[in-house]
Length: 138
Image 1 (tube, rainbow, N blue to C red):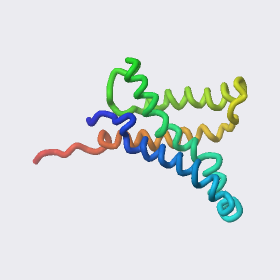
Image 2 (image 1 turned 90 degrees about the vertical axis):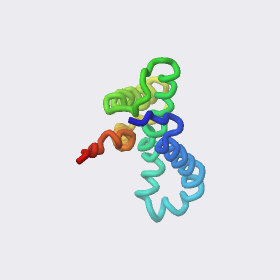
Image 3 (image 1 turned 135 degrees about the horizontal axis):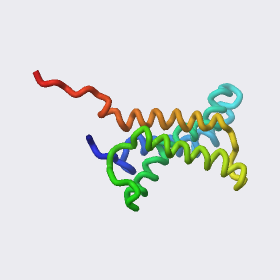
Image 4 (image 1 turned 60 degrees about the vertical axis):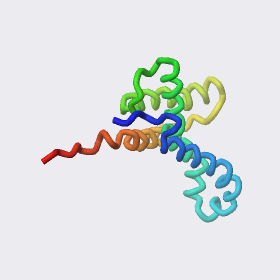
């Protein structure tokens, strides 16, 4: 299996670019068009898009730091259990600790569904070679 790319991973790069495009171009410059004409798109881009790309944008950085510090002992793509453990920690930190104890952020439980959807899609992407059937030599 090919080693995980961490900060060189394509999905990580795409997620960062999508985040920057949404924050720097779409939200500030297209709000006047999206809000009245496509309210569902505005709601998604304003409230849930960042939650959807959290796992593909943040997990490679965290895993890279864990690898550098010796907390991660391999360079395989993140597995389901690894992704779920980070999903649990981030959900608690971002939706309970942050809003209720640090008064940072919003305690919107639906955001956890977007964290999970993004993490699920990212895990499928990162582990796609392992899911392909091996060719049998005739």
